[in-house]
Amino acid sequence: MPHDAIITRANLKTPKAAAVAGILFSVLVIAIFWLLRAAIPADPLEAGAWLTADRGQVALALNLMPLAGVSFLWFIGVLRDRLGAREDRFFATVFLGSALLFLSTVFAAAAVIGAILITFTEQPTEILNSATLHIARALAYNLINVYAIKMACVFMISTSTVAISTGLAPRWIALLGYVLALVLLLGSYLQTWSFLVMPLWVLLLSSYILVDNFRAGDATVAPGAGG
Image 1: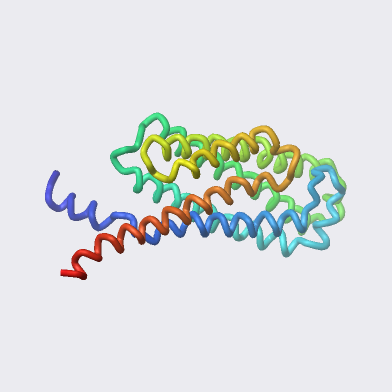
Image 2: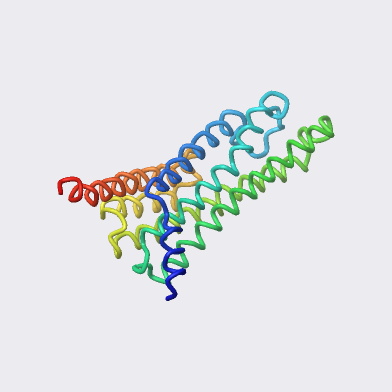
């Protein structure tokens, strides 16, 4: 490998504090979920009274969504950087693909809710309790509760498998990921808060990586400091 390429690769190495991206993603998603659930009823067939009372709250949640998406992408980069040459191609493909599909379905659901807000602004009387509103709400509901959550299950299972095989994280975090993924797979329709399972697990994993990165940095600096 040319000397310039080696220098460039070293300069592009992910900073240790980049693991905070997973924490930021988790905090943002929890805040977004709270804002949306406090404003929008769980029933996708309700008349749409929230459009007149809580539009500002919903708009705030939708504006936070891109920030959460960027943080999640950065978190994926942190995991792949941590794996390095140990990355298994099969599980890495499933891990990356499920992460991107999860993010795309969440973005699609947010776009549907955003379209409802825009339509209501232009035609407030026509959209309330209309077939268009019910179809859009049902579409957003299915995107989140069927597709996004199932992709979150695949992401947690593949990440946990990679963590066990490569030592990316402690075994108990990986085993917890399997258990929580099973809970999501079987119970996502039973509890509306089940969407929070994946970001809470990411918060745990990111916190461990952040602490471990700084612990490793301190161990590297310590010998020189004593000499």
